[in-house]
Image (tube, rainbow, N blue to C red; front, side):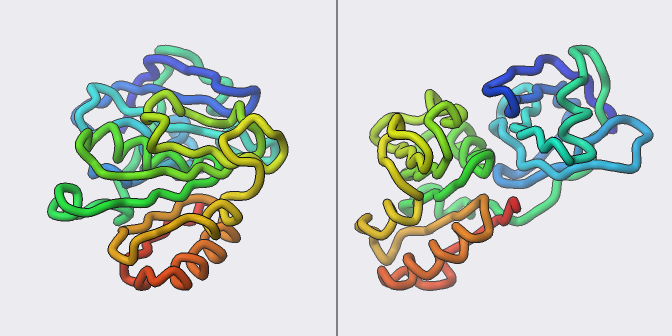
Length: 213
């Protein structure tokens, strides 16, 4: 289905948000869609960044220089139509958990996307986010979260909330065994975080992941 671009917002030199007409596109927060130019074979999967009640669709995209799709999408313009397929995926929250549970969201880079959608979709959610990035300017959408619920960990500068990798911060974090943990981003972070969370007594069935790369 074709959706027209409403706006393109550049967050850094390589990362941007595309906002599109929603056109009655229904999804569950945490799902992803496939996005590309009309009549093109190459499409790329992106987690939905916007909330379920927003009157538009948003995706957060990092341009990959050797990529087939992200470079082309960065050159698109307002009013241009893009092809969307989906939604897909099961990286979602159960209705009963939203009301009762405490959540820990672990993200690297643009892996923050589904968590941004969760927070926008469920305003009463009890959550904390740890966002692993290289430098502080990559705190995409930081203003969307109360400072008490969001921690940025920066590996290449000292301007984040914590200097070092996400997993180093997690090692020293108290995590209740009843916490539901959602991991999205770099596969190495996800593997290491799984081990750390299990060592803290979090059961495997309470750890959910979505690998970005």
